[in-house]
Amino acid sequence: MYKLKEDGIIAVVDMIEGFINFGALSSPDIRAIVPPMQDFLKNTVESKVFLVDSHNEEAIEFKDFPPHCIKGSGEDKVIEELEEFAEMKFMKNSFNAFHSEQFRSYIIRNMDKFRNYYIIGCCTDICVLNLALTLKTFFNEHSFGNEVYVIRELVDTFNLPGHDRTTENNAALGIMKTNGIKIISLEDLRA
Image 1 (spheres, helix red, strand yellow):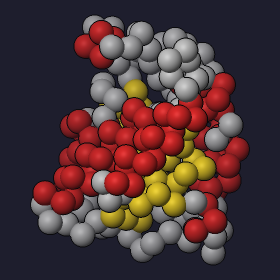
Image 2 (spheres, one colour):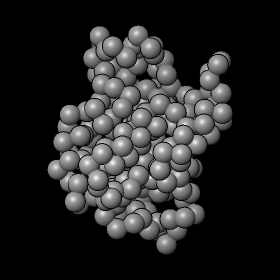
Image 3 (tube, helix red, strand yellow):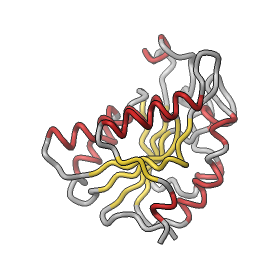
Image 4 (cartoon, rainbow, N blue to C red):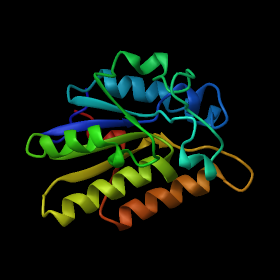
């Protein structure tokens, strides 16, 4: 079992077909975090929310990234290995899940219930980074004492020419740490 801080919630970012199994932005590198993530989710009792890239065909994000995870394409489905843990799903049309109206409303409504946010998933340097920084700055702006954690072994990103996975992953973790986000390991959470 893993022991998270009291009032914890787990946010699982983009562990979906279009980033892992098929599509323009799928990456076999991210598949490596699936088994330890399954174990972690199976051995935690905290609430879990899945944040799912689900774009319309005219998504403005496609100016910066190839078309991906279009609604109804199959790319916007939680991977089979993790589907059983997807108690609650929030669709997003941006790489920053906080801008999903439903997710943001959920966070605001449950501010007193959830004080410790544990983020896992992909991609460390894009979706994970943006969510972690936005949550942290939102809590700071409103003087909430809520904390944001990223579990090092349960985040990863992709390898492409000009985008070295190890370099980008480490840079993103460093940026988050500099901004007050707690970078922790699974070992820190062993009960």
